[in-house]
Image 1 (cartoon, rainbow, N blue to C red):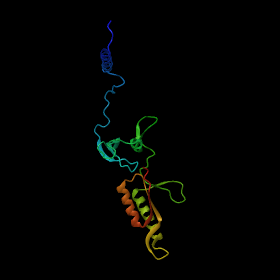
Image 2: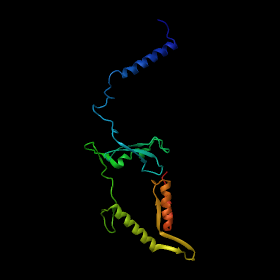
Image 3: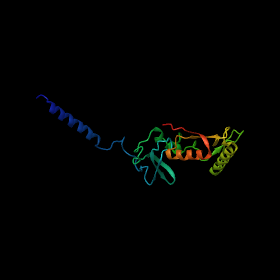
Image 4: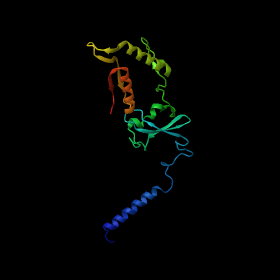
Length: 201
């Protein structure tokens, strides 16, 4: 028996490796087999591009819906900010809408998701569900009353200040630059001097 050279050893190793890889593709592997009749989950869905709801990063997502029901959320590969990638929070935003039932394993609308505004009146312990229109009207009325009752045109020295120190504005982390700009313009228009932003970045 001749001695094995380095070249022949590499050839034998390559043949053995190729043979073992090809063996894996001979026949159908039960672990890789799809269930009979199983359809791709994004068949007949409508795709809409949107922005992730969690922070001010503004990452793009693709939302897939079928018959008004959310089917899938994934990163948008064409978006200039995230190029299809999502952080752990962005990847889990499907759970804002839907969860899987522990008993049946079926997907259901998240029972903890609030879909209408709620208000807890003064002296009450229960939350009252109201319409969006009522919520906007009540907030606007409270802002107007607070501003009217506390608006200052001049300070103690007679200097014109035109301000309302009884209201503050705190921007949320989900606001992007353009939304934060509009919120600040509204705050300045009301005469609010306490304007802050919680960026969380």
